[in-house]
Figure 1 (spheres, rainbow, N blue to C red):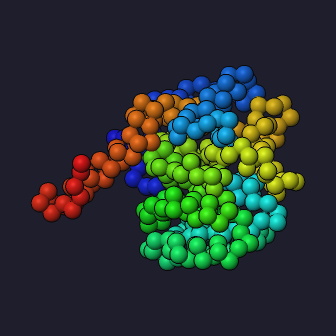
Figure 2: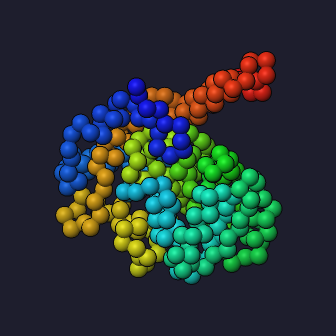
Figure 3: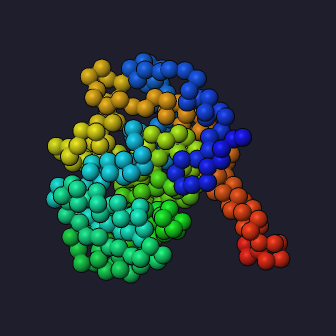
Length: 289
């Protein structure tokens, strides 16, 4: 009997993705690997129809939290100040990351069952002094989808950059890439993209990467390093080749299924089916279009 995962994060794999991950061995110094890496990076950008001259996808080994920490550690300047917005366990990781790195930050916390209070966010930004806001898009602690577009609008208004944790939303939800405030979003190959765990990425503005902190706060979490070094003979960073092979196939499946809009519609249908299973039709509170 096949195992079906019903947890946030790692998901059940399609047969094609499972075969792609383990049907061959591939070294990260081989030309075939570099071609694969280029395809995956391009497909991640294409998933949201982004301009490759403006945006780039940086892949690395690790979980979604790894990508989030890399985003914060790489893009917050040493004289920067971070507003860490949290309404769940995922969001609270932002403050912990900033604290470990000794960053100047304010934690704007909420009860886990509450929506983000955007009035409080605006009041904090109006006080001035912040360079960045970091927040979670889909807070899996409670299943709440925070309003990323509203956060981006506030960041635009007050001239700060937004670092968005999209680990549980990239590939299935709308992300405000059109906002000039969005500097980067971090995500993972599993979750909504249906790849295998162990591979994560950050989709960042090239201008934000060009202004990355120097010298780096970390070797293994410095985004420009992951962008430049993989495949180089002297690179200390070893990319997860099997994860990239799986993600390459998973992204092709996403495209065939109608992109992030199609995946979102499929998730909505599954949610409706679960609701139907728990309530007889005459009691169902969800109406489908």
